[in-house]
Amino acid sequence: MIITVTLNVALDLTYRVGALEPRASHRVLDVVERAGGKGLNVARVLAALGHRVAVTGFAGGPAGAEVRRRLAADPNAARLAEALVPIAGHTRRTVGIVESRSGGATLLNEPGPTVTPAEWGALLRVYRELLAAGDADAVALCGSLPPGVPVGAYAELIREARAAGVYVLLDSAGPPLRRGLAARPDLVKPNADELAGLTGFAEPVRAARDARRRGARAVAASLGAEGMLVVADDDAGWRAAPPVPLSGNPTGAGDSAVAGLLSGLAEGLPWPARLARAVALSAATVLAPAAGEYDPAAYAELLPRVEVVPATW
Image (cartoon, rainbow, N blue to C red; front, side, top):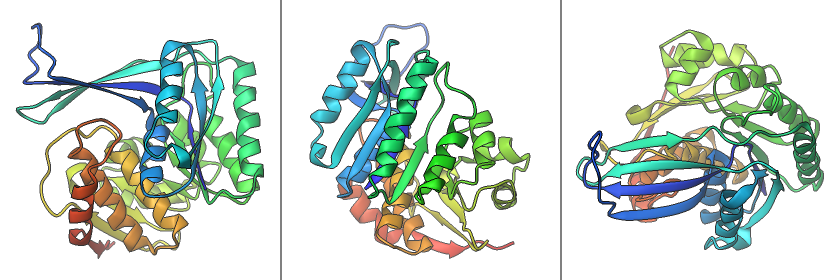
């Protein structure tokens, strides 16, 4: 089983329009709603790949109730154990506007509800219970922190996972990522901008190796259209990129990459195979019509064509 933690759960809305024009009225061609937030996107992809997942985080208000309903109705709900913590605040919504003509996407992200100290304590209790069950292969800590959650929240969750002997991945940015590194996660998964902001180095390999020196045992950096770079815990490195240029909705592509990395870990795959899976899933998510999903046919076609090469320094 893999545990995903989404402290800033969202109800994702994807609107499809012909083209987005500023200060203009638009006819919406299609609307899709999904339970969202980075960790829930990761969980859905893992479940679709056949892995059991337990999801926790915060959910409140009408949007939170809809998130729960949609998780229960997911085609792979039998592999999705929902352990969201109820809160008084209202779960946020995110809106993605996808242009049919260009394939581009515009994203609007609400900040999230304020979480009280008592609600944070309840989340910690649920998280400890999931770890104590003893069947977790890994934990994924994903996304931003809602107001009220301590900036060191991920560091605390990392220490809990490591104390339980469970592999832990951190996918966040800014101060939560910086504080989390000090707790020595097994893997961090920033994008290129987040990695540069953390280390001060624009060159990805140098930045990834610096992040390892700061506490990460391994680093997997998303490089956008250029694919992904991994610097492993023995300082070996690999790079991989999609075999063809892609256009579409990038929302959730990084989350699918996390699912690829963790599913490969759970299956005992070596790093190059995990990286190839992560890149193919990420690319197949760009080609999918809604946030947090991937196109299975595109994934099956892309995976054997992803070339993984050693990174040099």
